[in-house]
Image (cartoon, rainbow, N blue to C red; front, side):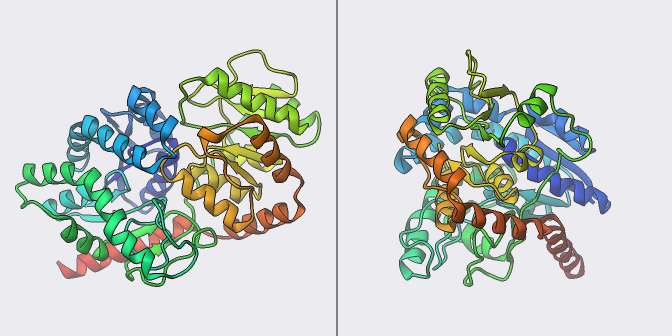
Length: 426
């Protein structure tokens, strides 16, 4: 079966998509993955066909708009306005890429950045669409786990349902409704209103790529919505050979902490580096600094800090005491699976949600939003993550539960049941 996976976003969005794609390929699917051009070689290494998108997340994050999004992304109103401007600038190219990638596809897997218009492409072609979000669906629920916001988190309330219907759903449609109706116009479909899309979403198979131990599954979601467990792509097993300097550093003392903000860029990487270095020094720990897209640590560092470009999280995190991270869904997942407390410094989007969940679960300290990041606050959070026995025990217990799950297997089972049902209905 010809299958297209729409994986527009950062590495944290692409990596679980590759994991699902590999599993589908193993079941006989001809899998194509649409992702930024910088990810094409990596996708090909895993035996999948890469379709390079004309819009690369690297280009977006390094643009003025992208840096503004990172620097002010913890303000929900600013975040919404900037994201709308980003989609306005790059939306036409995103649509062109999706139409090209989905040509001839019988199965389309989409995520938050493509769900709305992927549904229209599937409607026109007769393909089966499956949504594969890495954060809770935008569909309003009484329990309120949406990654955007919830007025009464952690318990059922009609306020959550109303907030979802009156704010969350309209906000997302404001972002993506224009590009969705552009697709529909080009495909000869009638324009779609938000309520029609939300009604269709309730009938769509949605497989959430995270653990119910981290975000419980709401009881008022439709039966087509499932929480499968995380979709891990273990790249640190077998073939990975760490740099000798990293192996020596890890062996030279107690487990260090890992520090890195992944795909987050920075207006002032030097200033961010100074905060990180000073906080590590104040905590009395050693650290492995992953430079990431912001090129952190591009300066003289003390011998208690080793700077590397990157390392597979499934290899590195079990070897450290804790990790200072930006809070992307994939990085949080890797840290939790390793049983290590995350110190979350959210920059934008769903990172704020994951930071809250880490604190609510008691497996990490309170998140420090990027605009409030100081040496003192980070040093205190590192101290808590490395010395709080209860927190560390809870993190270990959660890690064991996550490691026992087969998220990929569960997602594939749901997808195949949906494909069988569609085949019988034709």
